[in-house]
Amino acid sequence: MNIKDTLLGRRAVLAGVAAAVVVGVSACSTAGTASSTGGSQKTITVATSNDAPFSFTEGGGDTLKGIDGEMINAIAEAKGWKVEVFVTDFNTLISALQAKKADVIVDAMYITDERKKQINFTDPWYTEGEGLLVPADSDIKTRDDLSGKVVGAQTGTAFADFIKTLGAKDTKFFDSQAALVAAVANKQVDAAITDSAVLAYSFKQNPNPKVKLVSPYTPHFPGTIGAGVRKDDTQLLDDLNSGLADLKKSPKYLEILKKYGLDESNEK
Image 1 (spheres, one colour):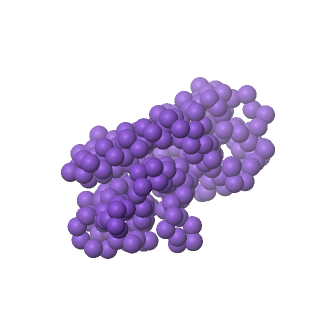
Image 2: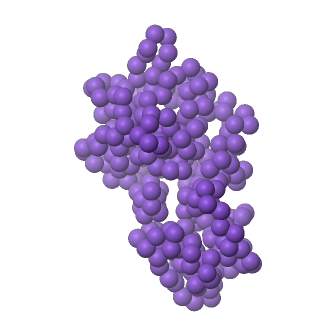
Image 3: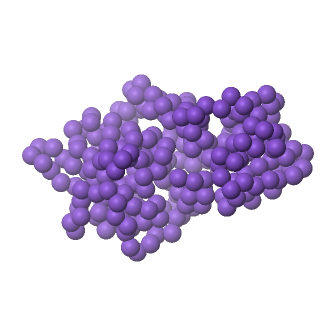
């Protein structure tokens, strides 16, 4: 997943909904509801764009990982449900749900008024926004400190325009997140604005002692994440909300956030 997908697709006010659904990994291909029962066990089909660190599989498997992925797994385990996975492009997730190719969207989708016209959202799962990346020895603490500094962002993202509004002495743009991080580490720029969850997860995999994410930090682009269901699927909505409430009462909720680089500030 790149940052362009993150900001311009997932976290835009409304991703465009294509008519065709691109099918990836799915155990459900029939018309009608994707839910089924095998004996007494209910099966729910979860739609994802296979998007780390939010909701993804590895090696074409049918087991979800990631922040959202592990949360739906925990809810399903508590409810006694079986989870099957349906992979499609992010901009076709809503149309896939409406076509009953899946029962629930679990893919770090921002809850917005525009999206709520098409689907129902669960109670908030967590919050997520951009992060402020600086050299490890930097004393920059807020966006206000960027005035007169050299600030970087990745080309093609919402951040590329945003950093031009921060009073920077100069702005620099990079074609990849790796190049952006390297520029901060090498002090080609004084700071960079990028997606916090993606970067935090990458640092969990490959720590970089030359840089740090400013914390605490209040994002300019805050987003509240929820799972999406069809408008008429009220029972599933209630079940997901009750399962989420139970999960939030348990230590596992924060454990999942921290596993993927988030923390208490992302709790909702």
